View 1: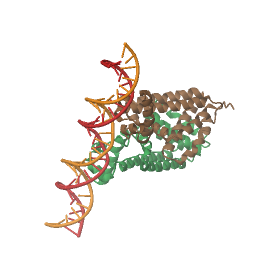
View 2: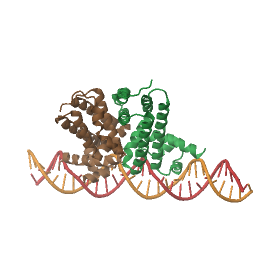
View 3: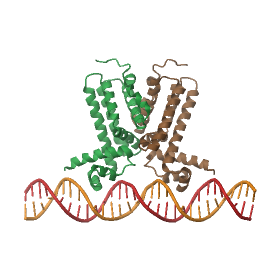
View 4: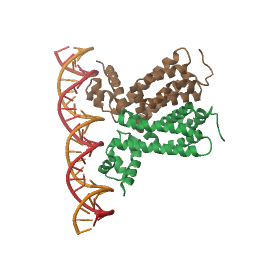
Amino acid sequence: MSAEERREDILRAAVVEFARGGFHGTSTEAIAARAGVSQPYLFRLFGTKRDLFIATVNSGFDRVEATFTAAAGRPGNPFENMGNAYKDLLQHRDELMLQLHAYAAAGDPEIQAAVRARYAGLYRLVEELSGAGEEQVLAFFALGMFLNVAAALDLPAMAHADAWEHLCLGPLPDTPS
Amino acid sequence: MSAEERREDILRAAVVEFARGGFHGTSTEAIAARAGVSQPYLFRLFGTKRDLFIATVNSGFDRVEATFTAAAGRPGNPFENMGNAYKDLLQHRDELMLQLHAYAAAGDPEIQAAVRARYAGLYRLVEELSGAGEEQVLAFFALGMFLNVAAALDLPAMAHADAWEHLCLGPLPDTPS
DNA sequence: CATGGTTGTTAGTGTACACTCACTAATACA
DNA sequence: TGTATTAGTGAGTGTACACTAACAACCATG
């Protein structure tokens, strides 16, 4: 099996494990076991636990960006489409918790720099895809973050997941059918 | 020195240390050292690292609730006052990172239950203090969460910290001078 | 068929850390 | 003055874990 395939196996396993325990609460042994690989080989491919964590977080951002890009390409209001797509993403508890752990791990400067770069990139992507004004993009991200936390806490506030329309779409000028 | 005073010393130290490393990334030894107490005594007073973490998070929620209650009591629009008060809270990086770590630690069921209860309580408190509608309270919390993350990541988006007015106060019917 | 690179493992090392045990010093108070 | 309670510690224990060293099997290609 090629090293590239192994890297992807390990990243898939790392998403699940890091989502549960975060950077410090997850052992490289657990990730290696889930990936079906010896633990030293993981270090050969990723060098360091921190580098593996950053790579894992990057893969999460890749998926979110792909989801948004695809959603915005569909007919209808791009914001509404992206909101719905994000609701679907939130069904995957692993992706969601991984995000939260990425933000929390910002105490580590190297991780912070990586996460900041990706988050800023996502923000600009949404600005571009939606073509919406500053305030609406801000409201979009704010609601997304709130839903993240609500889902992590199993809050009944998840019932508000349909609030995208009110908060982001309310004063939208263009709503092409 | 009374045990109660020692508990408070330790909680103050725990806020700082847990804010940096989160639940798993922080050693009880570091907390004890910062508090000027032997590590076994910390266990005598709090029983378990997890219990200490929960007590620390609770103390953080206590401070936020006290801040909001005081702010809402001042003359002017309660939402605007609470928003400004929250902006002040966000200047304290420790409080902010502690919150993030509390949400991220929701992978642990016991911690999740504790944090969920407090967060729900805070939500109801803000509903009551503001007397505002569902959507505005939601927008308030969403923006708060976004600012948390923006601050953790040192995002320039902190420039948007004045967005409270637009997002929460926009369509407010009653704005008593 | 040698030789060099790639894929992978077994066994280990040093250390950090949650938590315990057994003990001391002081104070309260009967 | 004796006795119990409270505040506090020094020294350890078992374990988990990040990371390394050394080696093995497989594949190319000359």
